[in-house]
Length: 603
Image (cartoon, rainbow, N blue to C red; front, side, top):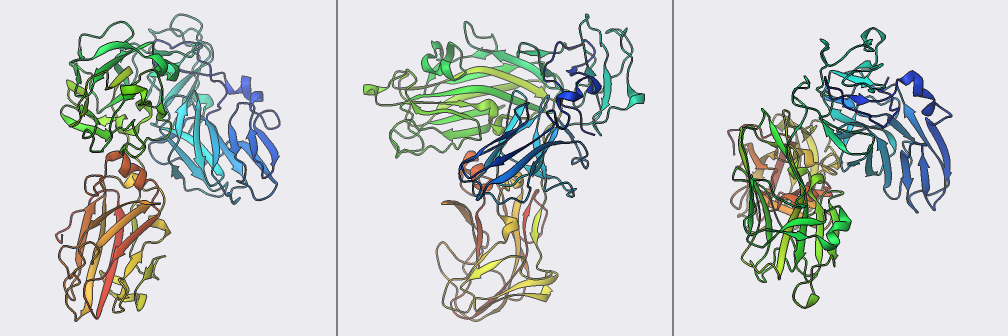
């Protein structure tokens, strides 16, 4: 059974663990029982509507998403197949059906969770046993929100395994009152595992594996508490090493450069405090850390204000780029533009990051012409669990570029800065996508070929894609559906394929940009392209050669956020196979998006 999602209130943290506080399932089951909060059915028409449990979780359907009036069911699901290795459920799974219902527009799900979620998974329905990772969710106050184009069974998950203490009372000083122990690897509260803790206090010899518990939990008032360092909890929980709101002072380990504490004006309505740390372009804020706890990663959470006439990537005065470095290594560098619409801003926000764009938030540049923008970088994945192990660290923020100007002309600010360490990094679930052409063309299509077919022999090894490009048109082949959609989990991996010129008799095709091995990845109108096969003619005659290119922003000429936006919504992958003027036959095999670069001797 799944961990009963029976209470979102936390009364206190006990002194022996970060304790997830909830009522015993037997006491609060009625709040989620079928017919009394565990399921709901609503007839929804083409005008859209909401189908939600009393908890507020369910689905919001926009106008036009349904073709006809349809009964939409939302139900808590107890029996689930095991989640992928390393993940446990963070809340109840919801079945939102009919699962195969065609949707003309995305719908918005609201899913429950407790603690620190890290992923959302989906099943097609009750007979499906293979979980699919779903990206794009935002997490806030016990609800994960995401847009999807398929209904089904969804659950929020978090990293970890082991035991979690569930406290039903927590009224006494440090005592665990009426608690049960839940095995988080199965989310099953076994009777023989229950602890009679009515007299247990913090000095008792209780062992709690808190690998999946969170270092920070919400209490009654909605604030956050952090367990003390001597709480006796497994060190896999995050530890806060800096938390500063810049309201009245700056910590000693923060060098503000030319920055000043400034009233936040309109930014205060967007989650910023009354004041923030503001600096001119060209200013660097440096934060030093010493004696950090043992860790494998660092997370940075802060609000960013882009103020007045920042010029983006453009040429006047020459661009403004916000750079964040950890120990001298750039982890973020993107341009920000606040002036005229024709200016290029390279930064493409992740879901939930953008708080305001081109709004007057109280800072007016020359002539009151320019506007402001605001971003919640605590929701930006680039700043989540950055690999780091040293006991000291130097974190720098700067807004740089050739167009550095006075603070009254353009500026930037940060606020509510929080830095935490983690003993675990997050490894996204990823599976290689490969076309080996062992049986059929595997969904691939073409333009410009006179013969396009799969052949069972002659490949590297076995089957291959046989493409006669002798017609006059330039020949392109297009990847099948398995290469489309969200492939950002392949970021940092590689694209590779094997190529062979089976027959050739013409001179080299000399197109400067689109010859054999030129590859384009598109996301709508945006795209990136590289030439994997050097030279004009392409691969050697009658010989297989493997070509690879890293799936990184740098290799494809994109910024980090541009690359993320592209790879998260791939709409086309095309490969040019034109190597010669005149007759030629090309073969393709083992086309792959790989999660990690694989060694090869043929590059």
